[in-house]
Length: 302
Image (tube, rainbow, N blue to C red; front, side, top):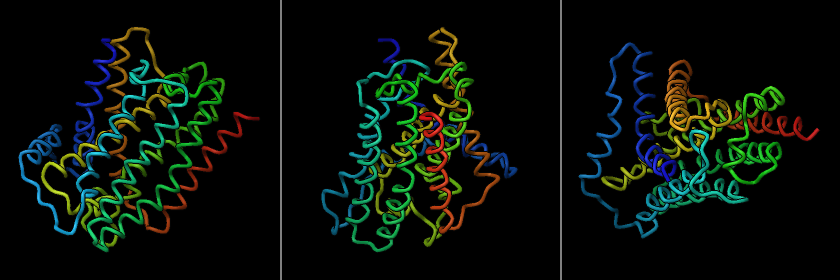
């Protein structure tokens, strides 16, 4: 019961902090002080106190989009083990549900954008769906490879299977999976080099353009859902890339939190030293990630 409470508390409270760490890291590279680490929390509180304006051209789909997206991401967070502890929800085959929950959230985000009738948001939705079609195979192949290695279809077993001993036994495959997962993490969360979350250039926006018509609490739900998605996929990456365990439950939770903060710093460094890729280069990088995961699977199956 204690692990479940800690799991839910960390999953609910930590996501905005990751955004704060990323922004602080980028500010340090730019020679600025930057916003406080807890600025994303302040922004969410401000949005939840505001009113919401809905266009007369929209339907219930536009209003349901942010809520269903957040609900799907919250369920996905309950399926992922944190701190080397089993997930609150775990059953054989839950990795398929995990992948399709993100598909469900993306579907409602895109149809909510299309529901506005704006060609501008339709452009962003088309780009989002196109790039997701190239990123999802990488996630599927990675999970299938880890399932083969752990001989299980449950995320709690799959993501706690990597250990230092298993890394030594299958180091090449694990390195390929880590590289593919990191690329997928950046793509799924619309981070540089795939998209710039701070951009306002109309012809380069992807995710941000789909939520331009949302305001107030609805926009706050979208921002929190995006932070939660970063946290969940980051937890998957940390479980595979840093399989550290001490046997002490509290120490393992501390290692996990420190690793997540380190991942946020790494993302901030990547966004500080790289520019956004040209649109035609993004599919090439995503296909490259799929090839990396496919090679990892071939090494496991040989």
